[in-house]
Image 1 (cartoon, rainbow, N blue to C red):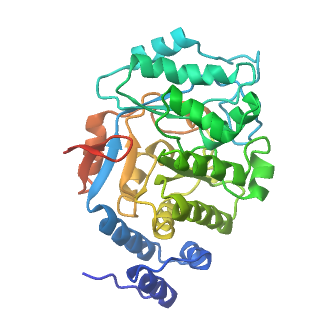
Image 2 (cartoon, one colour):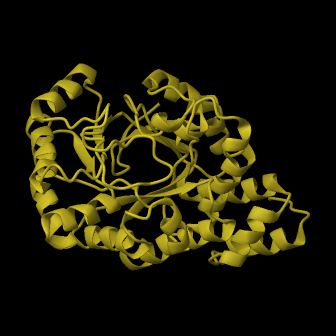
Image 3 (tube, rainbow, N blue to C red):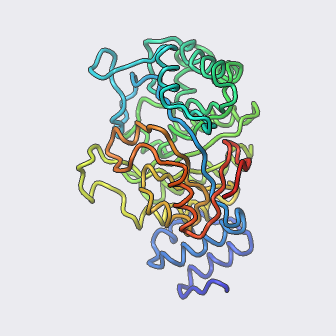
Length: 364
C-alpha cells in the first residue's frame, strides 16, 4: 500500500524522497513544521525499510569513562569535575581492569570509551588506556574518544590531530564514537561548549579518521538553545562530509537531558520532538545507512515507537552508562539482552545482534 498524504507540500517532499532526490534544509524545516507527524513517520519508515528491511540492530557493549576530570565548561554537563573536586577520579590501569572484570560477560563486543579533557595526565595516559584493554581483551572492539577529545589531545601533546589518531590506532583504536558534536554551529558552541573543538575541528577529526581507514559515528545533541534550522545545518554538515569520505556508519540524535532527574516536563524534549527528529534524521541523511534511537535518552517505549519512525538501531545493553545519568536521564543504566530482543520483537521487527561495524552476529 502506498503512502497517502493530504498535505500538498508533504506530497512534494514525498516525490523527492521516492525519486531519490536529496532534501534541502528548507524541506527539513517544513518537516519540523507540518502537523502531519504520522505522514513524516511514514516517509521515514519507507526509507528505512528500503535500506534495512525489518532488521533492528543491537550490540552488547560496556561504557568506560576512565576520568571525569575536565578542563571544558559545557553548560549541559553534569559528569565533569575539576581537579581535586569531590568526586573527581582518574582510573589507573589496575582500577580500569578491575572495573571491566567486575562487569564482564562473554558476549561483550565493544568498549565505548569517553571521558573528561584531563590536563593532569599526559597523552600517553589515554594511549595506555587503550593498550591495557587491547592486551587483556583483544577480541573486543575499542570505540574510544570523541572528535572533541582528539582535538584536545592534539593541544595536550603538541602534535597534529592526524598524529594523535595515528598513535591511537597503533595503540589499538578501532573506531571513534560520535560524541562531542553537540550542534555543529558556532553560535551554539560559543554559548554551550566554548572550550571544546569548533565545528570545523570536530568534522576535521572525523575526516582524518576516515582517511586513516576508520569508520566512525556521528551524534547530534538536540533540545536546548538550538533552532530547528541549526539542527538541519548540523545534519547537512555531517551529510556533506559523508559525501566526501563515506566514513560514517550511523547517525545518533541524542535528546538533551536536564540537570536533575526531578526536572519537570518543560525541561525535557517532548515525545513528539524526539520522534520527529529521528524521522527527519532518516530523511535528511540519505547517505548514512543507520539511524539510532538511543534508549538511554528517550526511554525504552519511545525507542520502540522510533522503529516505525525511521530508526533501525537501538544501541546496546550498555553496562553502566554514566554521562546521561549524571544529568537526569530517567532510564536504567543497563538493559538485558532478553529485554532488548523482546523490545524489538514486540514492535514486529527482527532483532539482529551486530558487531560495531554492523556485521551480523545473529538474527533472533
